[in-house]
Image (cartoon, rainbow, N blue to C red):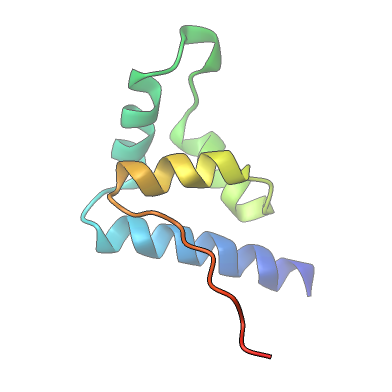
Length: 78
């Protein structure tokens, strides 16, 4: 069950990146433009985090901002 959730997260993030016309490689290049050398990342690192489901929420927010999205929390009807 945990693997399915990781796949859902990975697929959702990658789908939004693709829909926005970006590639993961280009997103990572943009991320690295504002980071000090010691904090730079790689495409493989972000891809692995997505696959494992270990990507930080702050990293997802950073990706969303780069590709022109913002994440909005909407209450679920009960």
